[in-house]
Image (cartoon, rainbow, N blue to C red; front, side, top):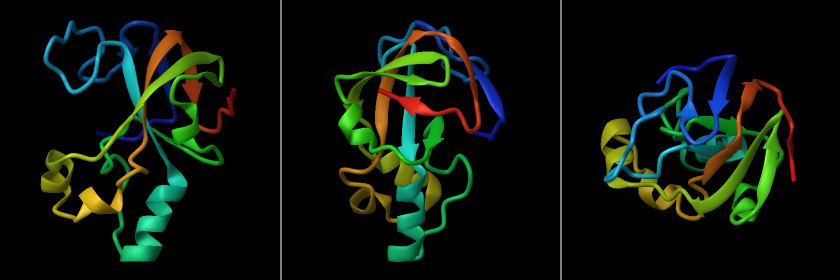
Length: 133
């Protein structure tokens, strides 16, 4: 995973350049056309509370947000810049994430691991785009 300044969100497919974009997935961790988001404040809190520093991409989430509580977006449509997304479930941490990072993230990210959301209307997403409900 690598950070980018902008990315095209494609309705029903995912994020352009993502390894899962456009693939029909029957047994993937989440459905086709979905993205994962995590609060930047959570990443900051892990460093402050536990001394766990996570580099860009290490959370294995597609988008890092600021100033919005993602747990509140389950079952709601929202805009990320011009793209329209719909939160459908919390994105709980998994053992695979803990194994990849070699950091104790399972309990640290409980109830704050982020959000899974469908891309309803595609558009370019740029760093700094606002999230509005």
